[in-house]
Each structure stands twice: as C-alpha cells, then as structure tokens.
Length: 66
Image 1 (cartoon, one colour):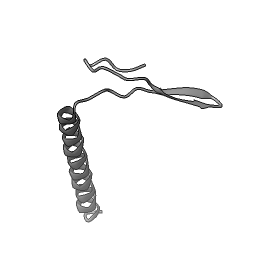
Image 2 (cartoon, rainbow, N blue to C red; image 1 turned 90 degrees about the horizontal axis):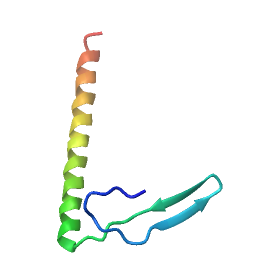
Image 3 (cartoon, rainbow, N blue to C red; image 1 turned 120 degrees about the vertical axis):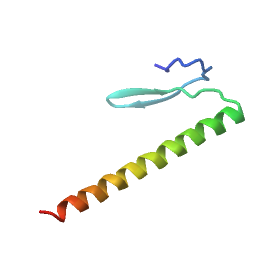
Image 4 (cartoon, rainbow, N blue to C red; image 1 turned 60 degrees about the horizontal axis):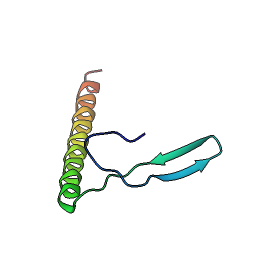
C-alpha cells in the first residue's frame, strides 16, 4: 500500500513472484520537488557515511587499549 504523505501516485508497477505480489507505487513529482527530495537523500547518505566512519574510528581507538 502506498504511504499517504500528500503525494499523488501513478499506476503501480506490479511484479509477480512465486511467493509474493509486489506493488511499487511511484509519486508524480514536479522536477523541483524531485530535485529537493534527491538532495535530502544525498544529505542523509552523507550523514550516514560520516557516522559509520566515526564509529569505525572509535572502535579502532578503543582496540588500541586492549
């Protein structure tokens, strides 16, 4: 089922597998809204990578004292 966050959705892409039927709903976005959302995704990905690197560095620092 599509999440309702105020978007208008087009026809779903339906894929049938032996154990499941998958329906992918895609919102109909203006080019500006699509660009804004892609920038939000890029920022979130950068934050995730930075956090993972910080955790890796902390683990390396802590293992020096073992």
